[in-house]
Image 1 (cartoon, one colour):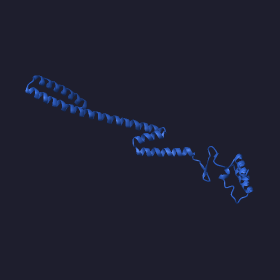
Image 2 (cartoon, rainbow, N blue to C red):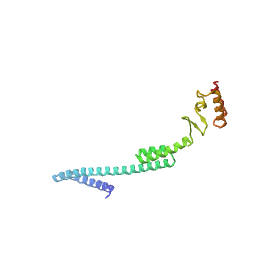
Image 3 (spheres, rainbow, N blue to C red):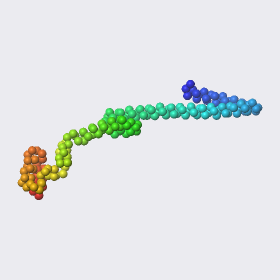
Image 4 (spheres, rainbow, N blue to C red):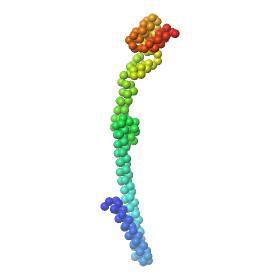
Length: 185
């Protein structure tokens, strides 16, 4: 019999037991009082059984709820992952304590982000970088080149700067800046 059926049966038994207890008490005989006492003890035993079954039903409902909530969060995490929203997917996988999925998402997240951020074409010049996409030159152009060493003359430095301009490695504005730095203006 199901738990709900047992609860219904217990309710009817409790009703019947109270009915007999009432009439046993009204009879005012020794047998009536014995019947009344036995019925009350039976009523309390039935109540304990009823409480136990109710608790089990609540626990089972909680397990079903937790399982559906877990599955819902897992579906949501996978949806975020498919949408490449790795941060939300990671938070849900962490909440669900799914370490293999966390590792997989972190690998995907940092591989893709690394390619996006660097554009795959960062040019390294003497330890600093030039962002080829925006042609941003950090610091002065002179500091990035090997021009300006103490053993070369200003004419040699100007020739090297001119050669850089001719090769298209620097533009006119950068050439003028280098020229001013070489000549000390």
